[in-house]
Image 1 (cartoon, protein in one colour):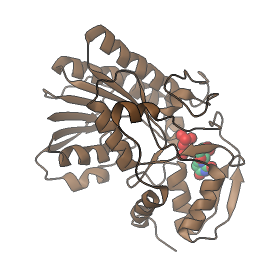
Image 2 (tube, helix red, strand yellow):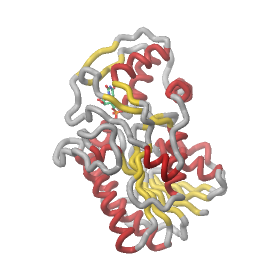
Image 3 (cartoon, helix red, strand yellow):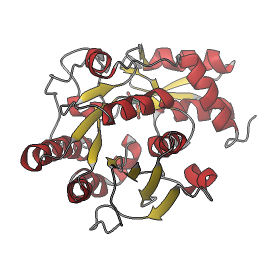
Length: 312
Ligand code: UDP
């Protein structure tokens, strides 16, 4: 089958390209490279089932189909990046989602939106099931991401209801693995980068906030299963193993055999206090649950970052 993927040079997008090509499909990959990197796709150069186009999907999309599947992954995804580019972030959730939905509609293709656990904001329900409507600050600094993804979900449902497009919505929780940008500010690359350099790990707030980390191969498997399903409402994809950020900092030090200091800085505005996916729906509907343990996923991730960081 023929696939169109936006955000294909990003972290998850590039792994999705690999998976679809390995499964025998052909892929047209779009990315404006605002945070994605050609390097993430350079191993695919010369693959005749793969084509990369530097393309801004917030503009009208003029690529030759037909496609069987349209995947909209394009977005700034790290708080550091979306706080630096709030308008581009809003556009990737709004205009770009509509543009990609139009391509799906034009060709009668299936459509998958990668949405986010940020739709739940700073949640009052824990763990978060898909039925929870969330607690989002609509005018806070993170709203450019949270609200554009909520809009993207609403637009996706509208295309399904209005035009019968066969849509899926994945709510992705924190995901990590090789090809994350080393300097994108997210906690996994930030801690590994510091530990590899022998520098202190910076914990924001008192470190009591929690996250749950899913390895990228598990995430991509969940996305592929969801894209083949008839589930139209959002499905959480993430690893329910929850730990505090301070525990994760201590864990990282131990894992890296490092004795670097842990230092504390103020908590960013609207930083969610607790986050853990309720994945009962993904288990039931997709027969999916993450398989990769944190230590195994981190080992692969550290291997990758070692190639980028001059190790002390
Ligand atoms: N965080 C931290 N130190 C860092 C980067 C992040 O303590 O160097 C914290 C951040 O405040 C948040 C959690 O780690 O509570 C996860 O942050 P990340 O940016 O990875 O993603 P988020 O889940 O907030 O989107």
